[in-house]
Length: 505
Image (spheres, helix red, strand yellow):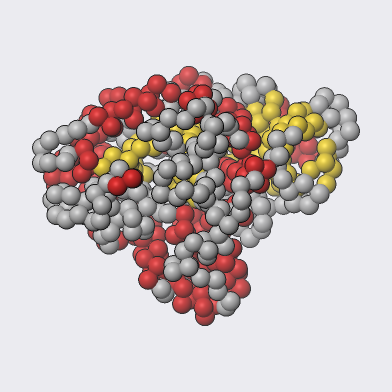
């Protein structure tokens, strides 16, 4: 790496650390409040709009302060190794779905046991939990949709018959858990997915306004999230964005790239397109119109201020992250934070490969951080072979049979540890095809590095140790270091401001 780039990293990190210390009011690691931070607009720089990679060439960016990491785990399934791994993620975040039809199976009768257990478990971990408030389908909605609970222990949501009564339920819910430290609430889950929501987009807007108001009236500290558009729902919106700009070729390419891993499993909803005419037909299909209607309805609610935070769900190939963040940065209010409460790797077409898994997870995380996403919650912790999908098509962090952490799990934990440090921030440097995303604070730091094409970093007298995606050790020392598109995660027990000097030697 050239001395110019090294100096750029050092200057960037020093400046960013000073800025973070001022903006955090001197708060240390013990003073962090995840819920309060979630509702505070962070100073973020969007990724390069028209380039591959998280930032434009020859730029340095302070992406976001106070990064946080967590996982979604199945609290009803015991798996050897899961508890130890969860405890390796300090100050984590997760979420849990609260369905009114389960909690209030009959009018005025409440059963809080499962929710109490979820909140107690996250409290024991020292984690924050986001509770997703869902209606379900029962007497509350006037009808049932399919199996009430089934294996998923939940039913499909519909608009409640009595919205004021539902608001009262929400106030009761928030009033029960806010004193226990729960201040983050989402309104439904993936409303563009028919297995979660079967009312229209207009009905969701009605519900969201009522629930948001009820949450805030019950807890002035509350942070409100949208439902989280399903990962598959975004490809249509990204393609439409490029079509509206008149860039048909890019729209077609973006659509095909986004759904590349969906074509084999959801052919009825998504089909490969050869030109703009076929793409427009896909956007005008039942699935295309449904996705766009809910994306537009949720964006409208965000513009109204119904939500405090945009909840991002993403399971596609990491090369789609930049287009997705470009769409969100152009569509959301400038001050609205984006938090990725569901991030994973959906890959039904390839056999599990630990090195591929680790490379894709780290690339996805790095690009989300570089694009200003503060929280990243990975899903699943471990695939459940007894669940809906017997084969592992969403690759988990732990081996589903032994509970042993995979390479991706170890690297994710490394980043989580760095992100939990006092005064933590995320910083990005990109130059000459080399990208570095640093996460850390005043006591520990991690550095993700990769090159678009094979290159060699220059020598440094004091070695910096790291781990490659295949699990092998990497050392950046006197002999330099070969760098390629697979990322390397370096760690150092030093302040973020010193990473530039360490990298430069």
